[in-house]
Length: 269
Image 1: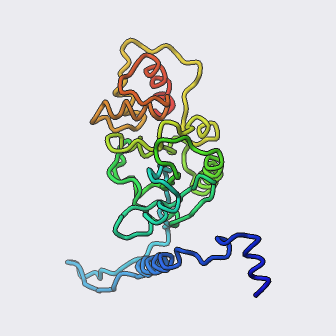
Image 2: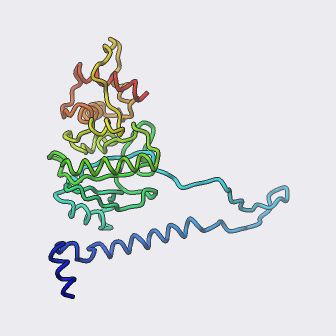
Image 3: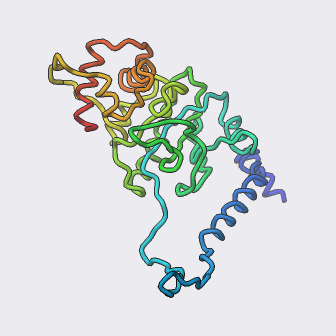
């Protein structure tokens, strides 16, 4: 007992305390078992004959696998601490969740199996995709929305993205932000997020420093659509694009914006 107390003093109280999410982890395991049971359940054999007298029976194919994520959506939590976010994501009444939460310190919390559907994207659109949650992994960064992102946090994010990209074969262009898929509702991750640094590591696309001259007939709205933005609200789409690629929160498009957009259009097309 004395040795245990000594270890607790050395490592700190948190290291020796019980997992505060033991109860919600139990709920997670129960739900996972229910889904696993549903997947293993085979259709009931009815043996009802068709008009030609041939029996209708279930034929289980041998060619299938699990659905896999093809996008990564990056968020900021818009809350005041990692603990607050973890609590939010473990309360049933909030109906929100993510696959991963990364604290400012770089501590990573894996909250949901990558193959399961988290409730992080909400109503949004990217290209022709409207059910974002069904094809993506959601990553929340502990940030209130008005502050820079800690280097330890970004380092953990890059390590996580490296694994996710390799395991799920996610294309570089498919690492985007919540504000990109929901420009009228969201602005996360905020304009201070280092998208260029991520792009240099292969997570997201970026524009060239040396670019071609923009043609006189360049249609910037069409270019935004080609990249993936929902242009139903053109002002919101422009602002989302500028926040991501130019770290600019203004709404009007200028010559620099058009130059960057024209360059990116070719990369996404």
